[in-house]
Amino acid sequence: MTLDSKILAELKDKLLLEKKRVEEELNRIAKPTTSAGDFSTNFSEIGTNEDENASEVEEYTDNLALEATLEKQLKEILEALEKMEAGTYGKCENCGTDIQLERLKAYPAAKNCIHC
Ligand SMILES: [Zn+2]
Image (cartoon, rainbow, N blue to C red; front, side):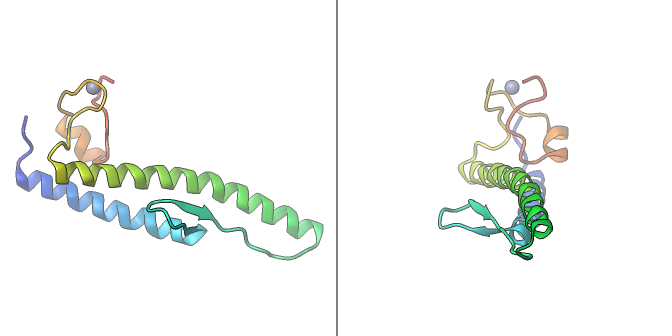
């Protein structure tokens, strides 16, 4: 199966939109570091008393988990975009077969086919 350029362009648009959304969310809770696609979670100082410290830590822990998830998504999106450039997009990284189009449409950053 070869993806035709129209479908490829559609999937690329989806990826770029998704990239923007993920980056916006990341920027809300974290700061980009010097390495591309890597973010470090913000730690906000609300105050210095015990209650305030506890909610700072709680918020930080939540954001840390969210940041890790978003960063993973962003990396997958960037990898998918790179593969589009390289012409290797749409192949399962595990078994090398073509990833089903339905799957790519639902999740354009998919790395593996439905069987893997
Ligand atoms: Zn596979």
